[in-house]
Image (cartoon, rainbow, N blue to C red):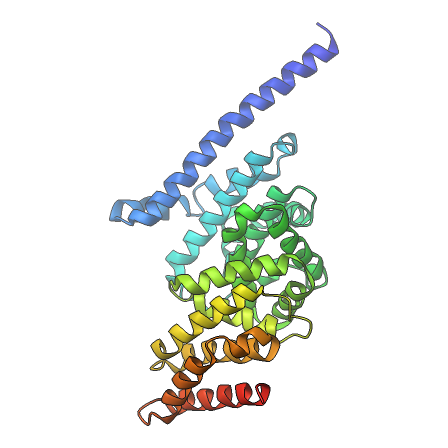
Length: 330
């Protein structure tokens, strides 16, 4: 038997193993997602078992994600990163029920799950994938790192990561719903990383696609995500050069949404501020926003400003928005 034949047989064996492992990991992911959705007592007990540091599941998956012989098997590596990401997310939910203010809790969980040595090895590999040429691996790597928290990124590397992230909106438009979560989380981290995200979005063509998806998040109105999406959009529009960030039709759609939502949130000063700030940023930057449904917007803002039962902060935001609009429409 020649060397070429032996090598081909070895490749076939690795390929078959990779396929088997992929089937297993994908099945495991489906089980995790089903358990999270159904949330029965039995489901919670199983989830607590698999996220326990005494369980080897996290270690096995992490090793599989970075194992050299599977480096060319993109689907397997993507699936394993997704599985570990889910384990970290589930652990966070059990620890804090999602209410923690510690953005780096994911790192602490990952270290506890797999140990320092393996975690460091995984960090090195996944960070390289996040800025690599293969978009699917890059997408899953960035999603994994964001799950860990801001300290998973070296600040000096973050500009390159944000460029790679925005490239993915162009390369993988089908993953846009997953990718938008990165922007929402990074914005919540505040500080220099938030500033880098917003600046990169304004400069990069992928920023337009990000804003399209943010608009969809805002329009769907589920949980707290629309408020964060509004903050991301407002932050981008506050930066010079963002005049072309939104298409004219999207500008009009956003005005329609704000017209609908401003009175809805009049009893919640924090939520109202997000909508009012976004409107102010929008009309300052985009001429189309100043004229679309202008009379209706003015009427809503004046009514809320003059309604004495409204929170004083809400009335103040209305006055500010009206003043901005008036100064731009003289």
